[in-house]
Length: 290
Figure (cartoon, rainbow, N blue to C red):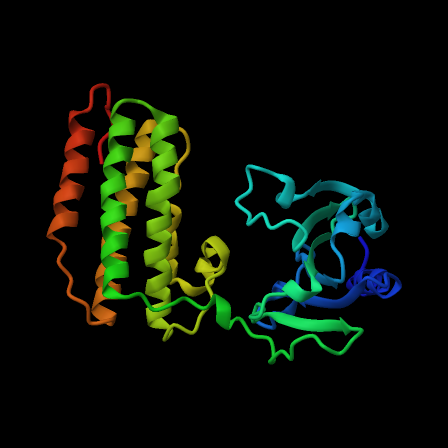
């Protein structure tokens, strides 16, 4: 595996040799002093260029970065949710055979975002006209304090879609039930978990994308409860996971609303929870119990 020094030298040398590349910016985890370095960190790089068209006319120019395992061009993929603005921005996501990865984004010079990611540093500025950046920090990624309406919407979505999960399990429609459980219901649980962690830390913490740092912030018993919300493909285990999600969500909601001095009216969630248990008990062919 090429070292960090080798990769950085390569990234900068390519930019220095290309007259149309006028600046290089790095952002992401490699700029975050709060992240423990590991071999899996990406190199999140921005090339500020005078003209994108010449680069994207023939993609083979990125071969200079090394032998690739796989590459993705999200701006050319209909299934990716990207803002398609031709000739203004283009990304190359490259995983190399040696284990390194570069996420390289080209920006047309006059269309560089005004507000760059708070985890950004300038590596190269040929014209000395890139924006002055403050000391990098993860302020853009801190858990944001929710409003009362934010919490109410999260609560409503969690309990509303939880009924879909129960119906899917009762009908033995596992793909549908799992889609609802690991989609909307999981998202709301993670949101409430993030707010809970944020509230306990004065909203000065970054829990990471998809809650990847949850374990670092949670007490052992809460982390164990959260792990129990993940189930396999067996119906009894998915019922148990659903009920674990519900119990944990109730606990988290009460803690968040208490910490933020928001009114907590849990009658709706208790009624829905009882309704889920009723579906479980009355569903034909279900021999498991909770």
